[in-house]
Length: 436
Image (spheres, rainbow, N blue to C red):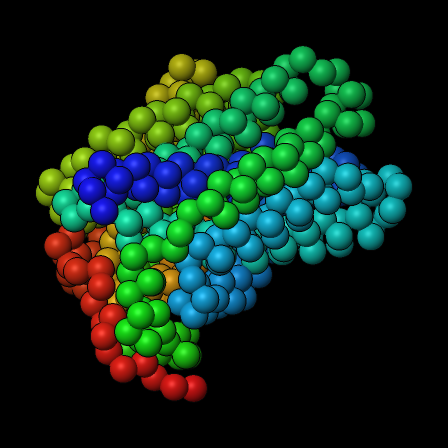
């Protein structure tokens, strides 16, 4: 294959992965964007604070299914291929999100409505358990050496753009519709967009061949027969290290992207449209910062960038939360500061979680460590933050939680993370696979 042909294939792979990942995270962002409205429609008998807590509890409940999704899709990706796995994740996510869009509320179905909402959130979580790490492996295994982070930046960038799109749709809806229209049908719009977007993503992914690394595994008969078991047995240190610093990635991202919209409107007194606009600004800052941070990661390495990001989360949350309460402009600056830190950790995490693991257990190993962090700390972050504010009466209580998590991650990176930038991606391709 000529260099021109290789470049064309890489562009096609990046586009397919990026659009599919965009669909996944737009669907997930739709729930967060409409969280305050959903609280009133599905939990009308609670007071405002309790209803929001219940809504975030269902949001966190969606993460319960993530380990199952990580186990299923990780094993699927290591045994049958990265591309087939990604086609299935996008079908699952789009279908579940569309069904949320047509779900009757408490007024029509009583307690059955929030129960079904919880189950559909579980289906979303099941899908997401395999999407992020799967898309990361797919792009990185195609990327040229020395530019892996820049190619892999398509994954976090499209997460940011998906949140921008979700917040943008939310801003348009909340600023143009009456309260009655918003509660009647307007809140459903972001969810209903899942079906056409999902079909587009599925079509693009179906047109791309599986990665060169996985094709090598097949050619050498090295595809693991029990990848989950083998990943846990052989890569326990890598899984624990990935978990240890990904908890800051998880808490930072979900406080920034999901929690801030409700936090600004419910705790700081901003209007819903102002909260949506602030979220759009911060997620745009995140998306742009990803491009620069990825270049720095390829130049200086994953470890220095992870240290900078985790240390930044120790230093910056308190002043950032203070800025959020000062004015609308301050809120945009404060949330953008946190967003850029998430970009720094995320753009090194994507190639690192692929590079840390040998080829035949890559999807399984990375999915276990990364997903566990998001289940235990990412999905619960909005709930914990809301509870801390309610219990303490302090609007900056979530900042202390973020600092505490970041301290743990700094220690993990300093003590356990070994630089992965130059590691070969085809490690273990010719190893004899373990039979079940």
